[in-house]
Image 1 (cartoon, rainbow, N blue to C red):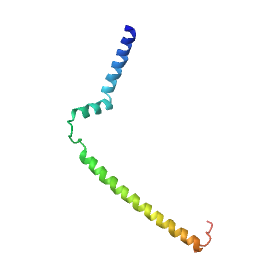
Image 2 (cartoon, rainbow, N blue to C red):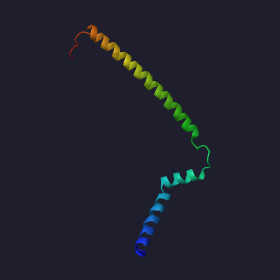
Image 3 (tube, helix red, strand yellow):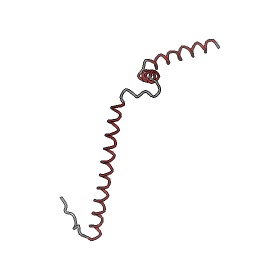
Image 4 (cartoon, one colour):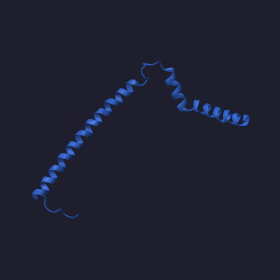
Length: 89
């Protein structure tokens, strides 16, 4: 029983040390150091990223509307036969 406990302590301790020196361990430590309610150090950057994301979402929405409009125009033209046969290149 003591042998198993020793092995668990060795590997468990080694794993804990490895995690604590990794970027994940540093991120956990930084989060624990911050007080509750304190803003993240990069809140200005996050606000800028959120603004850019909102602008991109708006652009994608507008592009989707334009695509729908173009598809409707093409469908109407095909129904009327306004488009002639295509030429081979």
